[in-house]
Length: 151
Image (cartoon, rainbow, N blue to C red; front, side, top):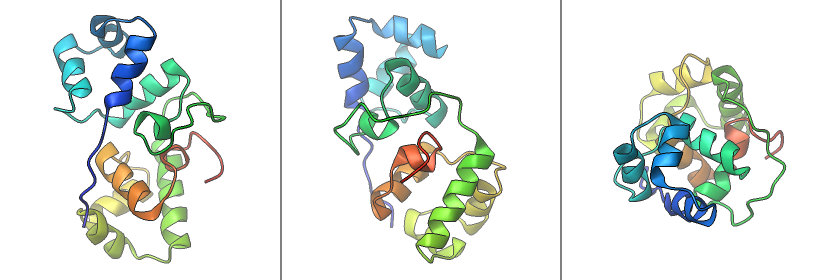
C-alpha cells in the first residue's frame, strides 16, 4: 500500500540559491505566493504540471527535485508533459513488471479504472501516484513522465 512522503525541500533550496523570492517563483508558475509557500513548507502537494515547470526553469530533473536522485544534471528534456506519452510509459513499465492494472492500483492505493485512464492518456498521472509507482518499483520519475527516454 502507498505510504511514501513527498519532500519538496529542494524547491526552496533552488529558489534561495538563485536569489529569488517566493513571489517571483509564484509569478512564474502563475499562482499566488501563499500557495507556493505551502509547497515549500510541505503543506500542499505540487501538481505535477507545476513541478515540471520548476524542473524546466531550474534545468534539473524531477528525480532531483523530489530527492529520488542527488544528481541534478542529467540529460533531461524540457517540455510540457504529454498525457498520451506518460500513459504509454506507465503501461510499458507495468507490463515489464508483469503487473495487472488491478494489482498496480492496489499497490498504490487507487482504482483500476484510474490506472486505465492514465494508461489510455485520458488523464495525466498525479504526482502522488506517479511518485508512489517510482518509489515502490525503483523507476525514474523523469522516465515515467517522459523527460528522459531510458529508465
